Image (cartoon, rainbow, N blue to C red):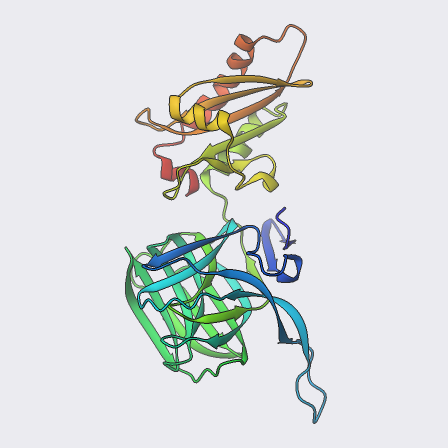
Length: 350
């Protein structure tokens, strides 16, 4: 899996709950963390996201009569000070989509002339459609917003005084159309969305304008959301258990280059497609290859209208007398079975 990400699976009956921990001490200093993607809502330049060192509360209870203990730790920082009003830099985690979850993190407002804000964006469909909860040091508010087609909507706010260079504990709970948020253990927001809530989406860190903000270790408890593409992979493996591997590539969310969106190896999710996958999608071609005792067939993936929306790589064990023709014949029913469930490109990640 991606470096810097700790995953623990907690089983309860037949329902699997997961925990993700963003431990920034595992990343290189003065560089963006691996496995995250910088995006921007509004205008201006993207954020300058890096790992820096800072003194952070240790988390251990203070001894009677003594101040809380602090320790130097690696934290995530947004350092750009570009003074553009409608500028919202975000850093999204690429390895998972989240629906219902409970998140705990720490944040610190470090600076900013026009704004001093820090928050969490969630159920991110793209840079113009998502929810976020943020703290404002200059406005003394703790607020929830929905971003719909790039415009702010559905604001809910609570008054709270945030000081600069002070670490705060933030907790957010997302359950269907209900969202709760607290600061330092005190619940300040309870939001119930009356319209249809946004579906599962990406999650990440959020700031505004020239805010310089730090974020500490972040822990997320959630029920994993399995996209259709991964469901199709799992179903294909049950039907064809002798397959050595299976991957689905697609360029979604406004991107131009394909990447692995589902596959038999979770560590490969998010890896960019190579020349073969790009050509299969561009020309709706079929590629055949061999690797030691395996054969690889990469075929275009079509939607209900016959449009090429991705590529499927089928990895099978070779046998004496294996030819390109019979390898394609073996792969064809697998890919056709996947295609039968894909009405449009967006279905792959629903």
